[in-house]
Length: 511
Image 1 (cartoon, rainbow, N blue to C red):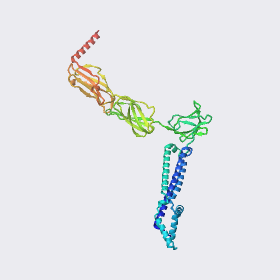
Image 2 (image 1 turned 90 degrees about the vertical axis):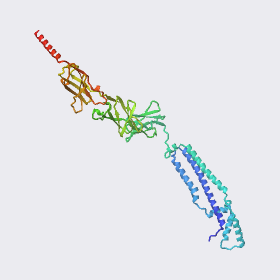
Image 3 (image 1 turned 60 degrees about the vertical axis):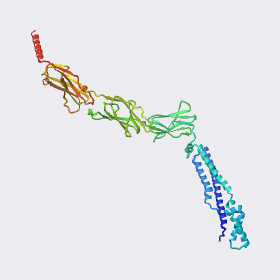
Image 4 (image 1 turned 180 degrees about the vertical axis):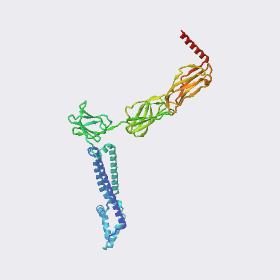
């Protein structure tokens, strides 16, 4: 049978055990904080001064040691239960009188009878013991000092960590997180990594004080084999160079001076945006009744005023922007049809020039943009030529007068004919066009019977040839040829002239 202690004595002992447990845990935290602080200071020192060591190595060591310290001074005390033996040893060392009373109490509850005097003495001591409180057993001031020490150690660790983060170069630490930085080379290489225009040359410069060391460069185009060449001395004794020529693909190169090899640098070949071809689709004004004309490989534009030209620019790469620059000033944006084709409609109103401006996704623009001509052809009025009669003439009222003419236009004749006006009467316009197809030129004749006009001697007929080309806004005067006059003379004058001419001829015959 397990001996039982009085209830208050049992509570007192349990309180002693609880305070003993708290003291042990605080001591463990204090030890862990001190160890953590020391390890943190050591880690910062190693990272700051051992710059030839990858940062990951001391970090892993730090984490392992922190884990071990946490296991020993945080996890183990948390999981370990205070035993009765530990409490007994604690009481034996610090409070032997309490231990004697407990032993006496246990003996009192045993099976061996004791005298009434002993029993009374034990109960008297137990009653006195019942008033004992836990704080006198374990000094709370010690526990408070331990708690303050724990807080101080952790606070100092936080300050050290913040100072370390403030002072160190995080970029440098990130750069050597897994690899130790290479030793500085006793020479410099220019340009290092660079962008080179496709087909261009690139000079590689090496500056070094190692005069007696061998100096070479090796390079290879993308997917090619390595090639090696010596570096040639430059104008000064410490500069050496080699020119990589005709770069059409990304090229890697590396420089070696003595036993020192540089990093492998890359020359990235970029292709400037270029115009591959320009297509022109002419859409003529409706009045010309001309079919659209497609010029797949064009450039200069020549078209009648009012023509709309669809400019299709084929390019060599994907672009961010394409436009036409008109007369070197005004910019007209082109619309993207696909990665290689940009289009825009240009209305032809006057002479000028245009250039194609390109810009790729990297912001590079096309070089040597060519200026193309824009020629706006003015649609001239039809050209009229009278073949007969030539100039002003006269006739009798019963004659038949023949008119002959030819007409030519730049693009299209819509109608033509003869126009005459007898003085005092309204003008009369006669259409002589018989063609149904589209024509640009015509020839015509028209016999006019004057007797149908009921003319009298002395009347004047003003006549001309007219032609229309259908251009909107064309003034009437532009459709008319030169005016001529036909005078109606008396028939008797014609007869007398004929007789006179006949008599003159007979006299000459007799002579």
